[in-house]
Image (tube, rainbow, N blue to C red):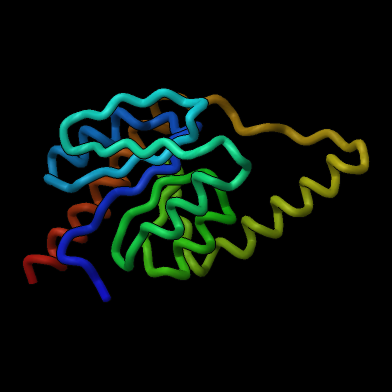
Amino acid sequence: MRKEQPTIVVDADACPVKAEIGEAARQFSVPVLMVASHDHRLSPQEGVEVVQVDRSNQSVDLYIVNHIARGDIVITQDFGLACIAIGKGAVVLSPRGEQYTDDNIDYLMERRHELAKRRRTGGKTRGPKAMNQTDRDRFQQKLTKVLLGEQENHDA
């Protein structure tokens, strides 16, 4: 069952675009739920609920999976969480503005697995490039586009 209004649910432990999420959410009057472990201090803001969970390995992911609904917007860098959220009917974006979908998540999961195998055997892999303003702008544009689409669907 689809909710009247989506919630933006954020895997907030290492999310570099928290300010951009808050700004877009206020613009569209959409609630935000930021979920982080106790190791990361987050301050609640207007329209932003903060939930702190224990620091065990998958606590943030499990909390998010148990609290999202069809139509919510999930922001995460975690392909595993993205895969589950897609299955629950959420729209899933990376902090760089890439939308995870049924069409690309299998490839991303397979690539992650191959890189992990390479590292286990002593191979070197590159980490992600540093976030820059272009990445932030791309994210904000994509989130705005998704929120506009949700608004149009709700008004129809």
